[in-house]
Image (cartoon, rainbow, N blue to C red; front, side):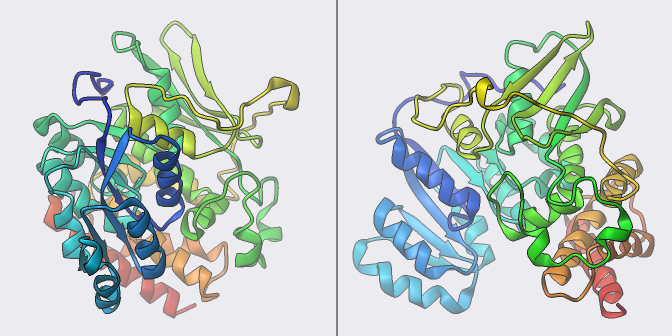
Amino acid sequence: MEQVPSSETFDPGEGRGLAILGSTGSIGTQALDVVRAQPGRFRVEVLTAGRNADLLIKQALEFKPNAVAIADEAQGQKVRDALWEHDIKAYAGQDAIAQLVEMDGIDIVLTALVGFAGLRPTMNAIAAGKHIALANKETLVVAGEIVMAAARDQGVDILPVDSEHSAIFQCLAGEFHNPIEKLILTASGGPFRGRDRASLEGVTKEQALKHPNWDMGAKITIDSASLMNKGLEVIEARWLFDVKAGDIEVVVHPQSIVHSCVQFEDGSIKAQLGLPDMKLPIQYALGYPKRLQNDFPRFSFADYANLTFEAPDKATFRNLQLAYDALDAGGSAPCVLNAANEVAVAAFLRDEVGFLEMSEVLEHALNSVSHVAKPDLEQLFELDRAAREAAQDRVTRS
């Protein structure tokens, strides 16, 4: 088990400097809600966005960061023109985002970018000694061994933001000397829980985007519907908490109140409960080790008389089993899986493949890209490219 970060690792005092990568997305906007609700506790140093220049400009004018960056270089001048007279530096391009995380004044980097794009900025931030609030699970899916080793070498904390991993992290507080027997990741089951494969043949993206409990971005919502999100979380948990794949169990919990559990070797289980609100794990990561007072809605058992649990249907939702298989295969397999999934989800959102066909895209890539037993960082970037090409080839033939 990875050691729970020490409360002495970085100063939990006032004015912690933040870089929020992906500030215009779901996690990023909720992180700024947390900052807004905790005046004086946080200092926004850097904001970055992918394409939403208008919202990035609005956020910058409110929070007055030292610098901002937008990945879409075509919109760089628009952002610069809007912010230059406010003494806010503005940059454009992926390289700029990766470099800004190294700035002085940043204490913690919230990586809320979607997909593989989060890997390089996270590695740069670790190399610069910045602590990481990790909302980009793909970073550990693709390069978990490399990322965790780099964090250990630099004395950097990786603080989980995903609700499930935050729950496990909270359950492990004070338990460092007690061996884990099993991690239990809960899943809502998504909008198609209980349906068989035949009934999923014709489902639409509009149906898949209607998550019953959580308000999330499009990519993660589709991943939740296919249970790929849970598969990626299994891989993330393996590296984050240093446990074997066979000791990570997924349980479907439709109410999304129990966010995850830890079972110890004496059979005791600790669980973290709360309403399905991402602001709580975001706040916990940004404010760690302090628990900050807030006015978030409170959970009441009286409102949830029945909390239910069931096994996931891996035969219908094959992506979950594919994720376990990739984790067992190790090496390059999780990287290939992740890249192919990003292509498959994008194709589904463009109506180019069916819901069930996404699993076929993943299998095609896994079977097409040569396995590498222990890839280094640069090899992972090449494997990502090759997997995307293989996945796109399968999409094109649909």
